[in-house]
Image 1 (cartoon, helix red, strand yellow):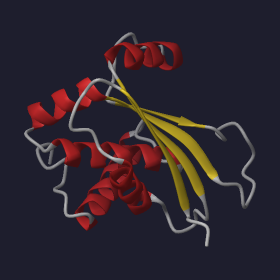
Image 2 (cartoon, one colour):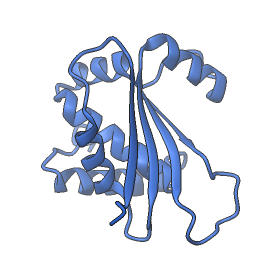
Image 3 (spheres, one colour):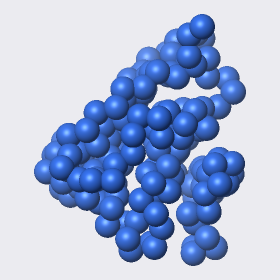
Amino acid sequence: MKQRLEICHQVESTATGLPDTAQFQAWAEAALLPDVAFAEITFRIVDTEEGQQLNRDYRGKDYATNVLTFTFDEDMPDVPGLPLLGDIVFCAQVVEKEAREQNISLPDHYAHLTIHGVLHLQGYDHLEEDEALEMEALETRLLAGLGISDPYREEK
């Protein structure tokens, strides 16, 4: 039987304490909406230099950010049956710094960013306030299902 989600896990970072393939698999599966029949997602963990280059090249922002999501079918028409395809790239040093500053565990922060990225792949965004509130509420609910605290509790 074919899995609903196939992932590729790439580590191009010198950081330690990084999530393993099984963790990414579980977090991503938790974030897949019921109407997604099949998904192929690459999870790539990079260091600051590559994270900054990707953010500069694709978003015009010259700094490393925590997570970048690249959707392969973004400009394609919506065709039923096509798999969800994309890459989610994490900058290990930024993720670690944020987890320390927010006083949350590194795995919990990676779980949150994984769910955030997978939701982006499924069309969610947070450019407008109403979109952000909807996405944050869904992230919070999905994380709670994994036993992880609300990452937005300080903002509420």
